[in-house]
Every structure is written in structure tokens, then in C-alpha cells.
Amino acid sequence: MLDTPATALRFPRLLLTGAAGGLGRELRPRLQRYCEILRLSDVAPLVPPQAASGEEIRPCALEDADAMMQLLEGVQAVVHLGGVSTEQPWAPILAANVMGMVNLYEAARKQGTRRIVFASSNHVMGFYRQDEVVDALSPPRPDGFYGLSKAFGEDVAQMYWDRWGIETVSVRIGSSYPEPKDRRMLSTWLSYDDLERLVVAALSAPVVGHSIIYGTSDNSSSWYDNRLARHLGYRPRDSSDPYRATVEARQPHLDLQDPATLHQGGAFVKTAPQG
Image (tube, rainbow, N blue to C red):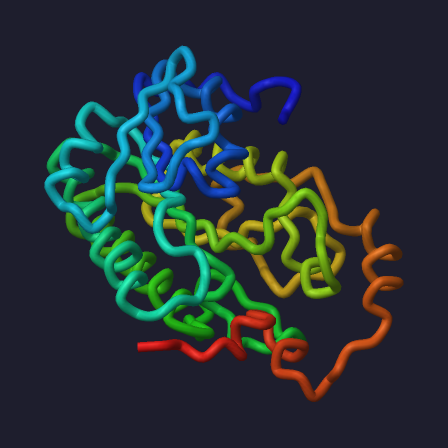
């Protein structure tokens, strides 16, 4: 956790969806300093299950439009991590990531919420090769139903900005773990502290419209060009570089015939979507 807040930002009520997931659990204590009340939502049990001071707990299924309308009541901004986060059969992805995304934005529109930070994914671009560099204007090339649903989510965010002025930062999160696990993650790694910096930048930038940014730390190797998101003010301070020697020793050889080695989506390009 960062030693000091990066901004004087403070919302009366901030909503964190997907609060029971890995990144939700990490952001839960970090986001409390940026709001008077942090509203937490998930369909899975929260850890810890009880609300701390300054927290509200509102379990909610994203595909339940009426429940989502209630969830957004009195909310000024949303950090939306909720939904299916891995390659799965189409039905649960459709419910949570497609129907749920529309329900979120319809509720935000009707309840007057003006800023959303959307956890998109690097898997929107998964079928680009690792010898290519992409930016926010590169056409999506999803590597499965999961990546496809995140590309749809970005389109929803764009439409709600164009039609109703709801601002969104779509964060194409790379690999956010305590440390990089393999050589692919040397390019995609996002530290937890940089995750917080990125979310705070997305919430506090004065004007964002609909902006797309790649969520990684300051890694020497990268497939992502964030020049089109400099207006957000995100400046990563961590890097995968200190882990490089250990990771390369653990994985000294790469199979250049393996699609997971060649493509930015890694193993996701080999996981067959299931209808």
C-alpha cells in the first residue's frame, strides 16, 4: 500500500464491484482513503465478510438489472472489477460481462453516476504477436469469449460517453500479482501499488471522456504504447526488471512453435471458447 495518498481526491460514495476477487481484495483497503463511504459488491463472500468503518456491503448479481439500479443509488464513481475474469463457457460470460455491463451503465445513467473505471483486459488484444506494439487505436483482436466480452464492454463505455456523457477509463489490465510468474509477465506485470496509482489517476484526471490505457508497471519490455493516455497522469513507479534474472532462470527456454509464446494473450490463445 502506498505510504501517502497520491491526490486529495475524496468521493462521498465510491462503489467497488468484484470486491471479493483478487484485485478487489487488494484495492478494498486502499480505496478507503479516497472516499467517505466505500460500497462493496460481489456475489462471492467478501474477506473479511463484515463491513469496516466507512464501508457498505451490497451483494449484487450484475445480470440483475433491478438490483444494479439500487446498487448505483447515491454513487458518484465506480471501480468496476466485477464479472467473469477467465475464459469460461459463453453463458456466464454473457450474463456477467455483457448483460452486466449494460446494466451497470444504465443504472449509472439513471442514478447520475459520472465516472467509471472499467477493468478491461489485455486479452482484448490477445492475438497480436509479442513482436508487435499496440496502442489505444489498434483494432481489438480478442483471444476468446472473455477478451471478446471486454472488447464489448469498452464499446459500451464509448457509447455511454458519446450519448450521455458518462466518463470511463477502460484499463486493459496486464498481470497484477505480487511478482511476475513467467517471462510473459515480465512485459505485462502490474504491481499492486501501480494498480492503485492507475485507479486513482483514472478517478482524479479532470477530463477523460472514454480513455483506454494499458495497465502495466514500468517494465523495460512491453508490447503496449500508452502515449495516447498521458492525459490521465498515470506514472508507474515499479518494474518487473528486478525479477528478470529469477524468472529467466526458472524458464530458460521458450518454445517458439507454441502459440502461447508467440502471442500477447499467452495461454488464453489456446483455451478453446466453449458455447
